[in-house]
Image (tube, rainbow, N blue to C red; front, side, top):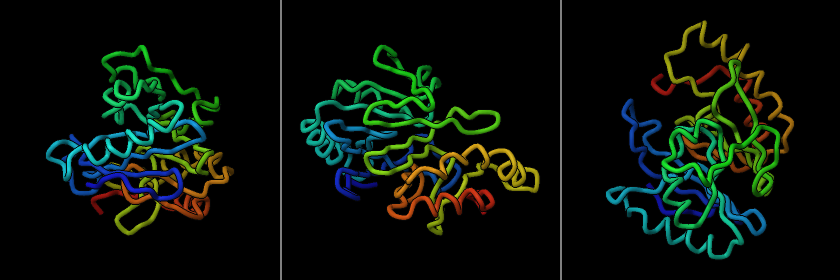
Length: 228
């Protein structure tokens, strides 16, 4: 668990304990990001640390308060419904609308400040969501042009060996490997054409340079299962 650290100018990351994670240590700690995109502050899949989580939320909030005070507006961006997490407390704290997939709405207590991110339609800070999966997944990877970054919820992770990989959350067998190779990876093909320098993953450390090469390697590799 950590206070927010600046990875590059205007790009911040912090980690917190996943409130509901039990299957093992991988995935128990999740990352959140804050990006300064011109005059806008973008909070991606934010999860505030709990009071008994390291130093608690105060250090992270101190950083976010300063960033929000310097920004003309703040927006919470969600990649997948499961990652609503601290979206509403931060919405209330910074008068920040929430943007994300349709599935986010069912996890909010109040949807008045919620806007559906439609794939291919530019949103706050120039963010563009991308549809993936066949059948289509609820997750929407986010292209963040201000930092040449792609943000993923659960589709891609950085493994314990430091490799970017597609995340298979069930034991791998020939059928699942074929599914990822033949049906899932092709739906991410359009992401290969983006000038991605950075890959921001919720699980595992981010890729901070040469992101396009890492992404291509991940889509060409077999999926990764975190218990192997």
